[in-house]
Amino acid sequence: MTTMNICWFITILLLLHSCNPGDGMDHGIVGGHVSVPHSRPYMVYIQDSRSKAACDGFLVREDFVMTAAHCKKSTLKVYLGVSDTTLLPHGIEVDSFPHPGFENKPGNDIMLLKLKTPATLNKTVTIIDLPNPWNDKMFKDCLVMGWGSMVYKHYSPSTVLRELNVTLKNLAHCFEPDVICNEDPFGPAQGDSGGPLVCKDIVMGIVSFNLEKTEGYLTGYTRISQHLLWINEIMKKNNI
Image: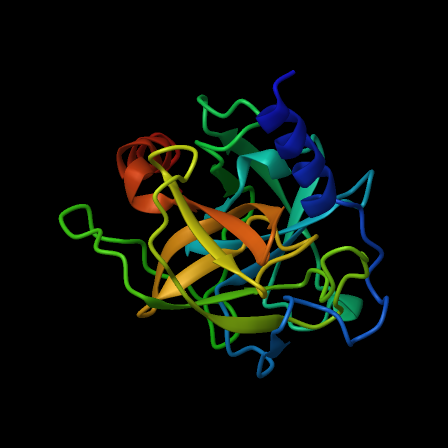
């Protein structure tokens, strides 16, 4: 296994660490703040029924949630309209469609989850827009959110959704063409995998990994616009 693959494997273990909802409300996105309850109604809490490993996701159609491919488990359920994970509604079973090119390393870290019971859209459950295929311009000021840890090296998941404004920077080396990288002291941590990078009310990226650097952490987001053809193909084949 190469050094990069070892780092990637360790990072996935950290991001996809099993969590026990209810471990204190002082944790979440590193450097973030508590979201106004139900102000991000597209957010989806994802949990494996057996291992209780958790990820985040977001609703892109009444019957589809998008998340990271490394979040795949055999018995996933999604929870819609969640603000506090100690008050989870009835979970919805899903069929998983991870990107066929994902190989447990940066790149192609995207997955669609087909809800076996389509969502009922309302004030607390809504869809977020994907980027347009003819305009995938990346904006500088974005928002990231999740129920993960507030401290990078100490895992204690948040029971409430937290969010953080991030300013994207241009980096010369970013692993793969479909990866957006951002180096910052603050950002997603363990348990935030699969969450959205939202820019101008459009979801542009998916939280994929983070790596410790000299002056902070490098966060990798899967660039959704690079996968629109695959996304449309899966959704078309699996209409409501």
